[in-house]
Length: 257
DNA sequence: ATGCCGCCCGTAGGGCGA
Picture 1 (tube, protein in one colour):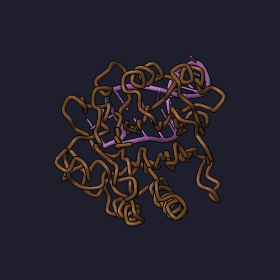
Picture 2 (picture 1 turned 45 degrees about the horizontal axis):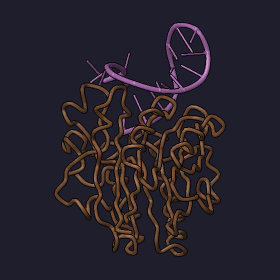
Picture 3 (picture 1 turned 135 degrees about the vertical axis):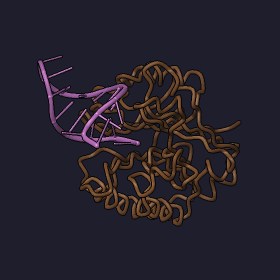
């Protein structure tokens, strides 16, 4: 028996629904965390997922953002957003699945380092850090997965020189990511696939995918207690090559039990 | 590069993403 958890920024669940259902049917993960569903809760196609044997937790909003967790096992103790942080942007969703605390995150993009959105990203991350710290104190078995909008190191960037200092790779953003790890989390892809330089996002423009001009910005972080049973972490590039794809592709973590 | 591409809302074209 093994447990598999995945994350995928789908860039509109309305447009990508058939792809998500096909991917679920093929891979049959235990958990799939979705970001940028871009729809209100009432429009979430719950029945399409229950038909495949999945439970749903969703925190949506009109037009932008929106996160969901798809799970074979029931989703318990569902918490929407970051408690105590009244953020109208729906970016965080937590639930307990088979004794594992799972947090789905969609970190703000940041636009550019000289923008208000960058300041929001850094402030938002401070709130996330406090929330994660509290969560880890209560849940030694925690997985935090999603679109972090941060490439942790230069080897996660197709052209580090061109990206130097830019949003998604800036020193302050990387310090945020490091601070998260310092709370007691491991970047499972880096830990389990140290030589793999795959990316999880490629720009729609300028044939970004064909030229492999990508970034690794979608991550699955896990506590030490989870790492003891982590077997593999991989990036499934295939959906990025499908017709009308999301600009992100799924990341999958496999646990031994 | 105010660019590129794709999605949203809404039915034109600006906001946003990364």
